[in-house]
Image (cartoon, rainbow, N blue to C red; front, side, top):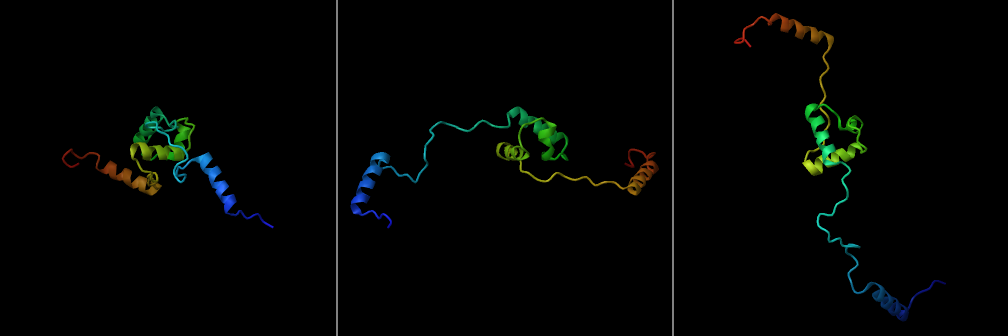
Length: 124
């Protein structure tokens, strides 16, 4: 047989609850932190973020996936993407892919360049 509280039990439980918790609304946050600009320590420092930006500016074909290893950062690629988005408003996209030149195309370009190598500045 299960215990079923009656009105007397419920009244005692309510009294104990209000004694412990008070009359506050407990649907809100558990604790309110009144400190200004309270954020955790950034995993990616300004110096590291500037290094990431420098690498991406110099080499737009560089994948973010390889940056932690290339720059000796102890963070994940997702951390880098999140910091770029939140702190600099740079959104993630796939790295641009270069078109690989076939051997035949390379020779055709070379022949074209050699053919017009002697042209004047006005022709170009």
